[in-house]
Amino acid sequence: MISLAGRDILHAWGKFVFTGVGLGLLIGVTLVMAGVYRGMVDDGKALLDNSGADLWVVQQDTLGPYAESSSLNDDLYRAILAMPGVDRAANVTYLTMQVRQGERDARDVRAMVVGVAAGAPAGTPGTPPYLVAGRQITRGHYEAVADVATGFRLGDTIKIRRNQYTVVGLTRRMVSSSGDPMVFVPLKDAQEAQFLKDNDAIWQSRRRTGENPAFNRPGAPGVLDAVIASQSSNNFVNAILVRLEPGADPDETARSIHRWKRLTVYTRAQMESILVGKLIATSAKQIGMFLVILAVVSAAIVAFIIYTLTMDKIREIAVLKLIGTRNRTIAAMIMQQALALGAIGFAVGKITATFTAPLFPKYVLLVPQDSIIGFFAVLVICALASVVAIRMALRVDPAEAIGG
Amino acid sequence: MAGKGIRIEGLRKRYGSGDTAVDALKGVDMHVEPGEVVGLVGPSGSGKSTLLKSLGAVIDPTAGRMTLGDEVIYDEGWKVPDLRALRRDRIGFVFQAPYLIPFLDVTDNVALPPMLAGVPNTEARKRALDLLMALDVQHRAQAMPSQLSGGEQQRVAIARGLVNHPPVILADEPTAPLDSQRAMAVIRILNDMAKKYETAIIVVTHDEKIIPTFKRIYHIRDGVTHEEAGEGRGFD
Ligand SMILES: Nc1ncnc2c1ncn2[C@@H]1O[C@H](COP(=O)(O)OP(=O)(O)O)[C@@H](O)[C@H]1O
Ligand SMILES: [Mg+2]
Image 1 (cartoon, each protein chain N blue to C red):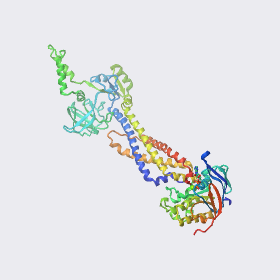
Image 2: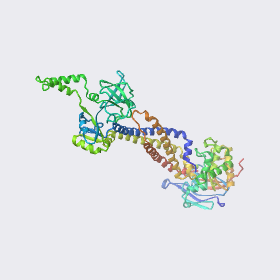
Image 3: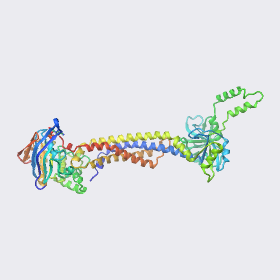
């Protein structure tokens, strides 16, 4: 027996290829959507991995520092450093903002500005673990290490709030949980950037403080200056990243920090579940909705095309039945055509996704597992979509071939 | 087939029921011997197609008896378990339009019925080529149906009807779309094939050009047949 489906496809290959390409673009979009989700998860993991931390110490009862805001005094890290099992502890601040390049250049990049201890020894949590060019921050002010994805180059001058920074090092794959590249600056500068008010506000605040008789006592001239100084400096950080001594138990250490310092502490696993389960959960559902819609649209397209192709063959199907073709053979012919359409579509979609993924602004991670699931999903959808056409074909009366 | 051809006795067919019932066949008697080509003529609505469909096992008659060769296939009910196999193996169909399968080439169109019956592809194609040769269209064996002329298509369709060497061929107005010369050619082919393969052939027709070629003709009117001797003239 010859393959009726195969012959029909060869005969009407134009229709199949055109429809297959159309379907393929849809499938490509679907694969990219799945890749966007994988990319978000991977960005989250990269954020955690590259921070080099085993524990995240954050403000009591918050999901900080990535999913909620968290604020800690910047001297707390010393006390944590003294806890058993802790090898290193470092302050970090995170601030997502537009970072401008050059002095009057209009170009700006959305980036996560990370404040880290300047001149910290290699391997301090929070600092970029590896550089692709240049060096780490060594001066306490106005130096920056940027992720290559920002497009900044060594020696570039960038502007964060009112200060200029020189890019002294480049790193890679350092991204925030929403995929924005990181720019590392000295901690002091970052604290200032988070807190910085405009000059008018500072001036007004000083005036108000000065007018307050409680602060401005005739007999105690130093009080006003001290109050103003404390008002215009920022001694807070968002989190303390902790690296454990080899062999220390993360849960045990987390518990004791929590108990003695009354701070919330997350282990790597907990942090990952916050990022994946909470921070990107809504985006994941959104993508899930799109996947459902795309699946329905693809099914509708396949069903429509296969139905039309079958409609065009009603007479031939009646003749095939009259000369003794089994219903099974006819159903198989239609089903195979739907599957072939799906296979063409998947091939086109896979190629499209592979070539377009790098062009997307956010990280699109195509994992083979998604492709395999996608391939079988396409086949199942195509098989289901062919059911309507098969039902119609099975109802064709062989007597129709003889006519009236 | 043991020399019996087709025998139809008291065949009745009623469409629908109650007030709207139509008695399309009201007791048809007919017989066709192996190697014989008989004409079935009658006005529109007289029951010709109903008779072919009954004999072709695509509709259920209401009453009567039909015999193919030695075997009673219908006697107040079907007597063969698998009507699809009956159509495939024992009845050849030729239609007014050729109704070739557009996505198969000429050889495979003709080879399809044996392939459906489980004959290996090469053997089925060999049989097809033999028939195409006999019908003088072997030079178009590789062509697609859309590339053939009307006459060539009809000859390919005849080849498909004959390829399983069925004891019976049912032809529904096979010459309608053809000019008189080609119509004659088709009738001659059917006669040749009837003799060569001992096939009993019924040709439904309106075609004045070919009516004189039949030796026997059944006239059908209001669901009843009358046998008549035809002129039995030659075909040239
Ligand atoms: N499926 C059907 N349902 C009801 N009546 C039918 C059907 N097919 C044919 N008939 C009726 O049966 C009669 C014979 O029809 P048919 O066999 O098609 O005649 P012919 O082929 O000689 O024109 C006509 O009166 C026609 O209206
Ligand atoms: Mg008719």
